[in-house]
Structures are given as C-alpha cells and as structure tokens.
Image (cartoon, rainbow, N blue to C red; front, top):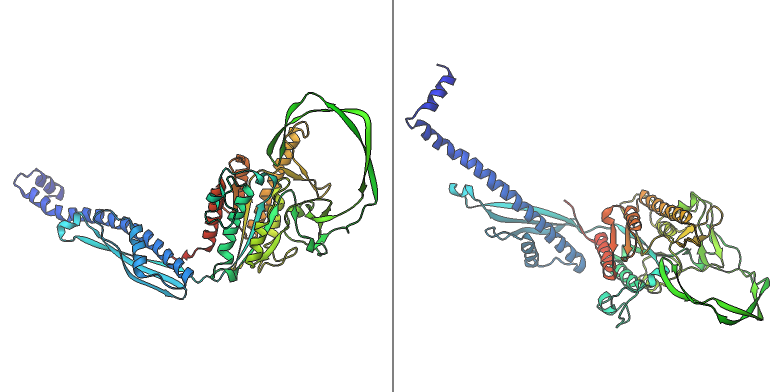
Length: 497
C-alpha cells in the first residue's frame, strides 16, 4: 500500500483518530504561534526601552559634563522611566549598571514585559535588556565662523517685544515693544557664543569668528599693510567741484512712488520742484581718497578661491561698509562686544559673506588663526550663514572689483539683465558653499523672516551640508531657536553605539 493511499484512507476515517492526532499537533502549533506573537511584542518593547535608555544616557552624560559629577541614579531612573512610555501591563524599567570608564558613560537597563499566548504554558513575562554608551571626553577643538547678514533689511521690525526675545532682560533694553531683526540676531548670536566661550568644558577648545556682510565685507583697517591686500594710500583733496543751486519757487503736482532699499519697499510722494533764475554756488573738495576697510571681489575664478595664492584682494577707496570682521578668537568678551556692536547698512551680496566666512577657517592667508585647514579629527570647522533676504547686489568683475546694486525697477535695469544678474549671484553663492563643503567645513544655513522668496530659501538649503543643516526661521523666536539648536547639535555628547 502506497503512502498516498494510506493518507487518503486516513483522511476518510471517521473513527476519531484524526481528531485526536490534530489535538495533539495543535499544542506545538499553538506554542509556535504564541512564541512568534510574544517575540514580536518583546522586540517592539526592547526598541522602546533602547530609545529611552539612549535618552537617559545622554541626559546623564550631559549632566556629568555640566557639573563634573554623575547625577543620582534615581534621577537617571526617573528620566528612563518617563521616556519608556510603557503600555499598561509592562513593568517599570530598572538600571542594572551605570558607570564611566575611559571617557565613555555606559548605562545598562532591563524591564519585564508580559507574554500573551505563552502564558498558558506557564510563562507570565519575559525580560528585555539594552545597553547605551555615550562618549563624554571628546577633546576636539571647535572653530566656528558666523557669516551674518547686517544689511538694511535687518532694520525691519519683527512684531515681537524684547520680553519675548530676551526673557531674562540681560541682552536687550527692556520694554521694547517691537524689536528689529538685527536685535534678534544679536540675542541669538550672544546666546550661541556664550554656550561655547563660557562653558567650563568648551571654552578652552572653542573659538569663534564673526563676518558681518552686506554689499561688501570689512576686513579691518589693521590689515591695510597685509601681504594679501592692496590698498592705495589715503590722500587729501586735490581740487574742488562747484555747483549752482537754483532757487525753488514752487512745486508741481505730487505723485506717489515706491523704491526698494535692499529689497525693502520704501513708499513716498514726489513733488517736482519749479526752479527760478536766482542761484547760489557751492564748492566742495574733490580728489580725496580714504579707505574704510572694504574689499571687493577678485576676478573669476579667484572670487571663489579661499586662499591668497599671490593674487591680492583690492581695497575699495571712498566706499563704506559695515562692522569689520573678527578673526577666530576664544576671547568671550571680544566676541560678545563684537556681536553687540553690529549695525546695519547697504544691500545684500551673499557670495562674499560665504567666502570670507570660509576664509576664517583656512590655515593659509589671508587669515591663519585656524588650527588646521584639512581633515583633522581633533579640529572641527563649522560655518553658519544667516541672511534675511535675496541677493540684492552683483559683482562688477571682470571690469572692476566693486559690486553694483540690483534694481527690480525696469526703468533702471531691464528685466532680462536683472534676472541674469540675480541668477549669477545665486550661482556664485552655491559655488562658494560647495567649495567650503569640499574643504570639509560643516555648513549650517539660516533664512530669517517670512518675506524671503522660495528660490532663495532653496538656494540656502542647497548651500547647507544637508537638509538637516538648513533652518527656515520665519520670525525672531525661530531665529533664536535655530541658533540654540545648532549650538546643541555641535556641543552635545553623542552615542557611541
């Protein structure tokens, strides 16, 4: 009799043997199914325990770095229990061991979780366990460059009072009903610098550079005779220019008008004057040459080269620019004073802000304060670029090192030319960012304000090291949060496993 025939006869049998056999076989089948269900729940519970354990280990390590001593175990356990977020029926977690060895904090924990199907076999619960390790003895030096937009648009009001931006009342004058963007930036920058230069664990290995930028960057009068810079000597007036000023006898019909200063619309009324025949003549000195610290752009491709390389930067005579740069320093007072004294003026040209921010972090001239210009596990180079607007200026290269204003008014600049200039300025901005990232500079970008256009936000997002390094700060509080989060990301202890 074949096996197939035997099985067919067995299946047709009605004498109870098949039912008996199936009852016997159902026990291991049920056990297998129960094991799979309970194992799946245990895996999910262990993932929750692991996440909670990681958070508790980071908390303990952060407290250790802040105070120099391990927090009490009951505080760590309370943190672990709160983050475990266990469903009803799961047991509370407990700490098996917490210790620090060789600058690594290790936290072992376990918990009992219920079993469901396997309970009928005498098992009420099963144990899950996990381990987290956190590096707390990182000796890496931090060298940070802040490229900050200080253009005219930063004078705009934020609609937020000083008490909200600066709750402690230590960084801004109190009772300001509507702070300006530049004031919010100062608060964000001061909070950021304080985390690095006043923290006992960080201040000896952190340095910060400040690069205020607008249409130009001010490299500082003290660098006038630097080998990488070409500046003609200041001269007095060599002549004079005289002009006739005719008497105004009346005004024509007034008409409204709007013009743009760094992308900010300025509305007014223009009443054309009517001149008479009487006049006065006034003469002013001409030919004087004065350098205020401003530098222009070098020709391509040197406008996107971070180093001196023998091609000098050109000082611009009779040109005004904003606060001068501050090279890398660990002097907390100097950094705080520099941020507090930032002032606003002129139009936005982002490429030079990025380039000089990068130049703060290179070992070669023009600035040599950085400890390393190449891959070095002991030096971490970071740049933050913050702007509240689009490119509103464009370099005149190769004709001149100066930068001209981009006017959206078709009566001033044809739209085709305006669009081409904006596109080129954006292209150079991205190229500058790519150069810095290729040089292994970690790059964060922040767009500030709700009025910055989508194209510029996308440009800044692409400028960053990755999407998580870009922050869209719609208002003053979001700007401060962005700087705070970047500081946390840079300074936080990190999981080793």
